[in-house]
Length: 272
Ligand code: SF4
Image 1: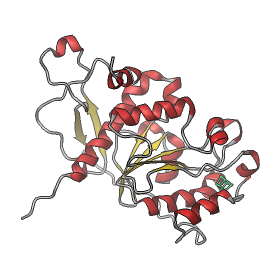
Image 2 (image 1 turned 120 degrees about the vertical axis):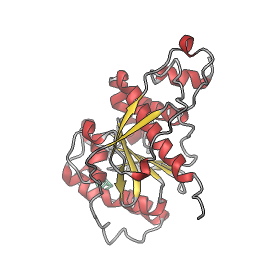
Image 3 (image 1 turned 90 degrees about the vertical axis):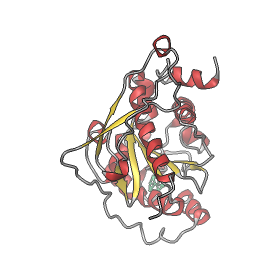
């Protein structure tokens, strides 16, 4: 079994999906609020001579009444606006703006390529992240790495990973609204510096914080959102997927929507 097959098996996605040849899905760029429908996996035996696919086919249904979803117009704290990467890291490292700092070992700033097109945003550090100072390590991090590899990405290479809050909430509870409000300007500044082409929000807390919502994950999935002009896709947090492996296929579906959108944006525009 090769590595790709092993990863697809872990994501509950093996046998591989088939690519549908036609018609091509409508471009997501045309509509910011699109519901997503996916074909069922095709067993290898039934696929026969069918072309093997790297990406599952997605048919995109446009909502009859589309609602453009915009991130709230939040201005970063004046004292982080204008900071470069180095100064921002130092500011986070020295931060004690909320009560989370008292209970954590260290701040967890973020990791990856500071010129990445892809930004993955989680909720906050867990015990492993708190100990190592890096987001998404341990089992959830391993699953995230495999999800990245499945769509031909790799941690640190055109990918940046960060969290909504930089300090570990005690007992791995969700950060509260006050803690999120205190810490969010750091992530906002990271996004300004990074200028990613795609944001993937992992889980309900990260999604609602970035979008300024109080919505269920189910209601946020399957739509192309907008964070200050940057496309944003909502999917499950890897820690949740470890507890609910049957949902992995949906996460794969979400990542493929993001990947398709990225491919669309990379197509050269036709000259008139
Ligand atoms: Fe500062 Fe964020 Fe840590 Fe709170 S969670 S102390 S705002 S770095």
